[in-house]
Length: 161
Image 1 (cartoon, rainbow, N blue to C red):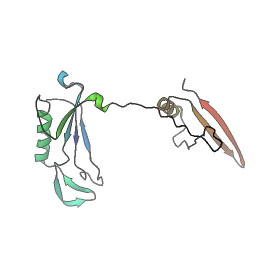
Image 2: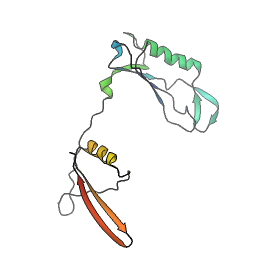
Image 3: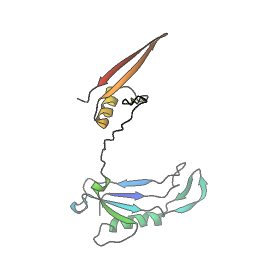
Image 4: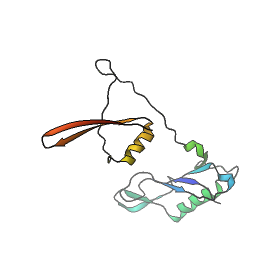
């Protein structure tokens, strides 16, 4: 069978990486019955200890563990299949939703506060466009230009339109 699945692997599986790892199994031609669904396989307990640790790599997956994962992947799509390590979700459960959050901050004179932070990305049109698309608002830049012992601040606003 073919489908779309995410396999959760044990931690300490890769050299100098102590975090859990996920494998995404993707196909463009999955059956109609699998469309809009995502299988999650919890294989975090499928490992054996390394005889000798290599940095943070202290576990490994043997053939028996790969067969365990493959069995759940192949049989998990069947109607009525029940295994505590296999869950089927709707694709929309993984959807990303952007939420606008407005902070009303005031200064000591009860005026709207201006919050500044350095713009650490490369100052390019593409980066500014991404920023605007994310914020869905205008972006104000104050650029401090220094030449020798002279300094000047230039302010400009980039409108989202």
